Image (tube, rainbow, N blue to C red):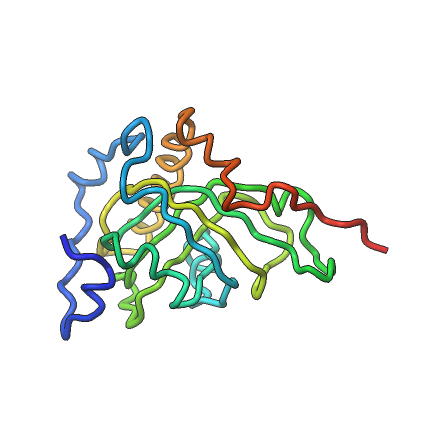
Length: 202
């Protein structure tokens, strides 16, 4: 199977498979082995960029996009699709932020790597949804992410509702898959800043 980076070099990308009723009804609720296996864990880091603005508004799943150069560690070794792991938003060093203490913890995430065939994106993106209610956006803040496993291939959809349904399943599968001892250990990985706190606002 070609990596996302290899597909990006093709003059014409292959069509993504269409989501089917059979796929939807047969999805496992836990994926991956009991302990992450190569090429995982994959470390990502970079400043959060504004994406297409569709995740929160249309899909109920706001996402944080990493810059193109920051996704090479995964696009060069992994195929397109949906992945799971942990992520952490880091507050600015000047201490001026609307984030709260809970916002800067290491949190579970799902990530879509690819072109989002339903919206026919032209650019390869890594869109990360952190499973937490942030009280403000964090564009421009640095984010560290640790990708630990693969959930499913990138699919095309006949309707937005079908896409939303799969996204909700992706979230449950990610949480179930991370709720295993060998995965939970990665919350304390050195890739994250475990001393990260929000200073009191004057």
